[in-house]
Image 1 (spheres, rainbow, N blue to C red):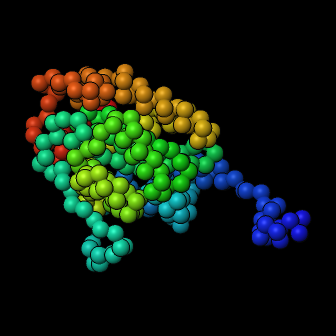
Image 2: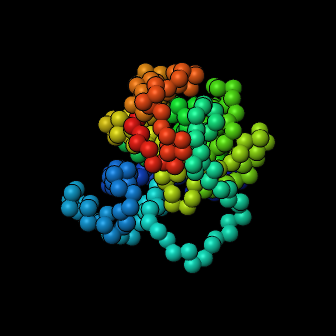
Length: 283
């Protein structure tokens, strides 16, 4: 064994290492944190300590909650004092959708990443959506939150539609400000748009999608791993795109609207209202 490890260039301790599963109580707390975040993203760690003890009988200290939220990528939404402006080496782009009337498919696409709890561990889901029709054009699931996850969803959207949007909107996450993502879009002549910092309402339609996906496909079933979760998501998203009537679209499906079907007159939002994130929407 010693000689084999020398030839492979690995430590002997590594060869016999057995991965330690995540603490079941940590998984339970993460699941509850995810549900509470979808309910009220403005709750900070102090209030979460109170809510978890009051509603679920869990006594968790603030340091543990902060560590788990950092692992999940959760950040409380609140107005932060701009005492300093970080320079992370990546260019930020302006938000281009304010007062913009989005009236046709492929005019604006958007993308986002969300944390997905599972029975054993967790994953991250990235989706690309057409802003006008609300159709999910591409998606990808992984246990790592990196640029490769987003590019996989993007390439799937290009492949299934054969189209390129005029504008692509995302948040300011590192996955969407990196050279790989920006270079791919700008190489195709796409105009890049980004939400304001902490402005989840700037990308409200895909945020609303996350709420539906989690409450209808994820929380109810407690999938054991990525394989089972991926199969369930494929089925749910196909139903969402092709079968489920969408109230905002005059009870048409996203696929029909994306294919060019005209929206009923009563379903059409005033110019700029939906793009501002102030119009009502129901998935």
